[in-house]
Image 1 (spheres, rainbow, N blue to C red):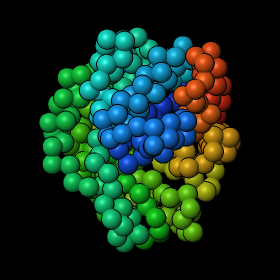
Image 2: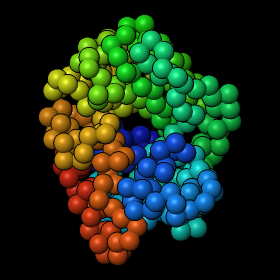
Image 3: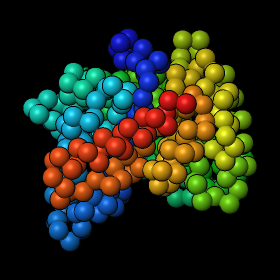
Amino acid sequence: MNTQQLEKLRSAKGFIAALDQSGGSTPKALSLYGIRPESYSGDQQMFDLMHAMRTRIMASPAFSGDRIVGAILFEQTMDRNIEERGSADYLWTVKQVVPFLKVDKGLAEERDGVQLMKPMPDLDALLALARGKGVFGTKMRSVVKHADARGIADVVEQQFAIARQILAAGLMPIVEPEVDIHATDKADAERLLTTALLSHLDRLLPQEQVMLKLTLPSVDNFYADFVAHPKVLRVLALSGGYAREQANRLLSRNHGVIASFSRALTEGLGAQQSQVEFDRVLDGSIASIYRASLT
């Protein structure tokens, strides 16, 4: 594990940009960017357009390691180039932004109030490829829909089983058991999830750490135990569908937690904007998320 990257993640001010929309979420992300589904044909053209959008974001002078400590990439983004460098290499070498990779293959059908991750039979090969390309860590997402103790226990058990596999490959796992912001029993789900997470953190080996990416909580500073936990390198917050202004406001009330926003980061960006306007909007977005992550 790159010690310079590890130290940056441990102590640097800033946030982690989530640029990891996959096949299922790409059409919506492109639509919000101003590219409608009827304007392209097939997955290949869709992913080409998405890579062009991500490249425009990462190559912008507003996007740098001064305010962004890390970025999460989709597998196809990792496999492509930015300015004739591999994407992960570009992020670290040019921008001083630590590269992560989304490794999950999407969500299974809901059961016991949760959606587990689909099987990842080729994970070891993907982890080896990612490490060879200079990726520092990974991210994998599950979703909690209701405060079901059995379902939440299953989510955390699966997350940590895969996290141990990722640690064994020499990479840093971001454990992401998202609680749906629309859950009617969201606060109860967060309490059950926190108890389960603490139990699994305490079982990690002395030299092992993970990162946590969690929904902005219903109770301010609810994740204080994670922020202080020796087994947690950093606690990240996902925007979860909140508009950027609301996500920033909620984040600023949770001390020691930094953003890892996706849609909230790209809010307001448009394919038809001039480069000057695009950079201006992106700079404002990054500045506001950075400020909210400083508390």
